[in-house]
Amino acid sequence: MSTISVPIPPKLETFINEMVKSGAASNKADLVRRAIAHYAEDQAVQAVLRSEQEAASGKVLHGDPKELMNKLS
Image (cartoon, rainbow, N blue to C red):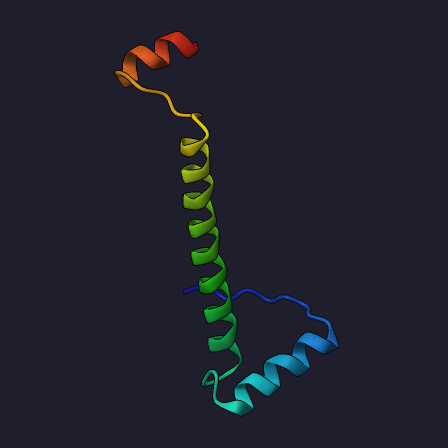
């Protein structure tokens, strides 16, 4: 595991400290790791939703992948 040092504004530091005090995480690092993991999950969900929206609007290619790649190149 690597360590990343990131400056944060005082308001975010206060929020982090309050979340740790409330028991939302065991310490500051745990809270930040959880927040990043949540963000990554959210991005994955958003990508799926965008794909579903594109499929629903007809922006889907059908056929053999190799043939499609040849057409696109």
